[in-house]
Length: 263
Image (cartoon, rainbow, N blue to C red; front, top):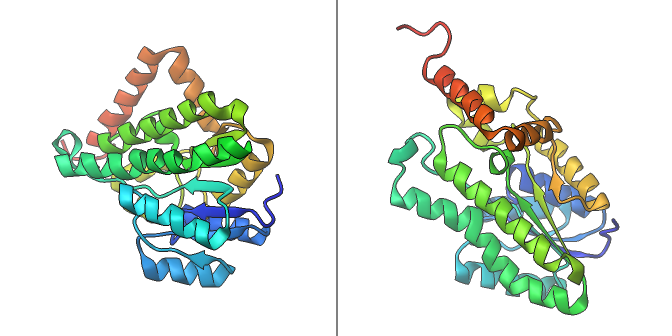
């Protein structure tokens, strides 16, 4: 898929996967807008890769509207939107996660995508072309022990991407969901005991994920799985949910009582 001269927006691109995506696309000749709440990081990445920085909120309704308007003013047209920004709030609290944790998780991990699509898709349908790429996480296909807010909101992100694809595919709108497992980002560094689970099938770099996304853009597949084993887990989960959940519960017990821990 050629991206040269296409207008691309990457949210959450000041660090991690978003930064790697922006850099990869800019290297391929795309005209990239780097968005992040961290204005300094957005400006730094944009300067490094020859892109344009538009820092700000990519989740709230007015923030999304402002970003879309500013990106259109800069690019002329938005051809590809990477809904990459995400958060993991309340992971240490489980069911004790607060209303604020839940609200923020749904706002950033789900409603940001809805709000962007609402502004972008009608124009794409009119011209018969556009692409919406969601960074959803393997947690959106499987689950995430220890973090109900992340697991539920990432499932919802995949569900919304599925709905978009089913509804607009024949109108020229390509929708894709990126679902990596363990990636060496700040979120992984802060995962604590869950690092062992996330690293079970290797910890990738953000650049590894960006390369997988690049290949996915070229073949148009809906699910982009930087960790191929996630496909096997997804099939196992769908084939026998009871067995899958029993296995996940065993992992939960192991987290609660790690080998060698005092009893």
